[in-house]
Length: 320
Image: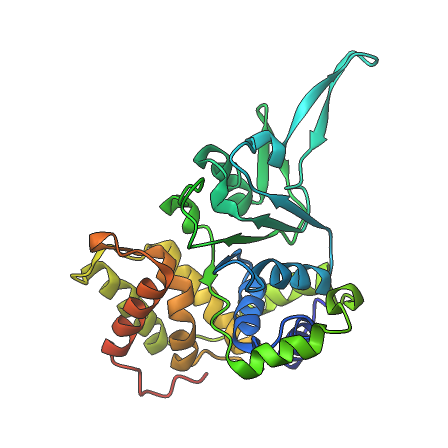
C-alpha cells in the first residue's frame, strides 16, 4: 500500500467507519474525528459520563484494525512497571529477563486513566511522544503503529488524579460521546436487544495500511492563507483574556496534521478552512487553561469555537 491513493484513503476510512458503526450507534461525527486522529498518527482521549460507550468505542476501533490490542484498567495502586514492564532475575539462568508490559502493543486502551497516580500516568509520556520505553536504562522501540485510547469520567472526583498539562498535550484529540436523543436510544435497544455486535466485529484494515496512510497525508496541500488561518487561531488563544495558558506550537502542528488527515478522509488533496473549523475544538480545547478554574471539556471547546469565529476565514483560492 506504499502507492496508496487519496480515493483509497477515503474508501478505507469509510470501511472503518461502517465497521465501528455496527457497534456504536449514531456517532458518525465522533468516529470520523477518531479516524482522522489515527490517520494523523496521534492518541485519543475520550471524556464522558459512565455508560456512554467510551470503552466500547475504543475497543471497536482496535478490533477494526488487524493489530495487537491490550487493555489496562487504571487504578490508584497501578504502578509504572505494570504498564511498561520490568526486569526479573531468573535464578535458573542467573540473568535478568525482561517481562514486557501491556504498552508493547499496537493499540493500548488506558481505561479510566485519571484513576492512576500522576507517577503512573507519566509512565506513558515517553511511549506516546517518542514511541519508545526506557526500562532500567535500556531504551526499547515500540511497534508501529502505536495508538493510545484513553478514557476518563468527568463526574467522579473521588480517587481520581487530573491529567497534567504535559500529558494532555500528548493527546492529539480530546472528545466526548455527546448526548443521545430519543431516536438514538431506541436504535441502541434495537441493535442490542438480541445481539452483541462487538463479538461479531472483524478487522477491516492492517497495520501497514495505517502506516501508508500516515505517510500519504503528509503530502496533502495546505495553502499559505490556510496556514496563516491556523496560526492566527493558535496565537489568539495566547492573547485571549479568558485563557491563562494558550495553545503551544505542538498544538499548532497537531492541528496541521489533523487537518491533512481530515481532508484525505474526504478524498481531497488540499485542506479547506472548514476542516480547521471542524477540528479546532477537539484538537485545541484540551491544550488551554482558562482563568477561574473553569477547565472542563465543554467550556474549553466553546471557548475555542468563539476564537475560531472571531478569526477571518481565508477567501483566497486555497486549493492547490
